[in-house]
Length: 126
Image 1: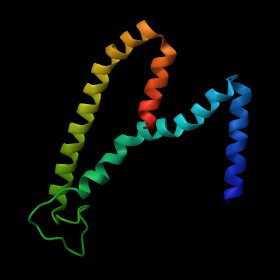
Image 2 (image 1 turned 90 degrees about the vertical axis):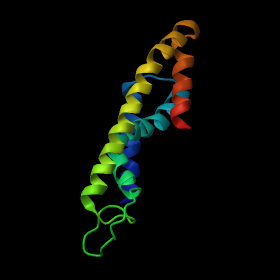
Image 3 (image 1 turned 90 degrees about the horizontal axis):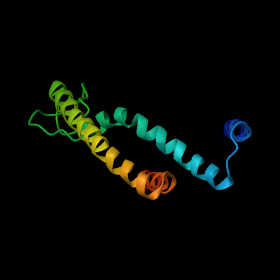
């Protein structure tokens, strides 16, 4: 099964290489950046399970109903606190994007687009 997945992945990459003409170093960056970009886009869906596990309250955890937290048995409290924290995280992320746009635009104007893009990709990778 892994052989079929590897063959399909190699076929897809070969198809992309014939579609887009890019230098080999850019293909390496693209292969690294594409999964990271997918994780970045889908990260909004990854907050909630982590945040649910961090909620603490005085209600005991029961064996019958799992609330999502090992330290709080109240399912409604866990969901409401986790959703509130997720809303704050998404809000902060949007504010950071709003503030970094003009800064990155100014850097692009003074240093060129390619160095700023490479710096941004490097920052996401780290």
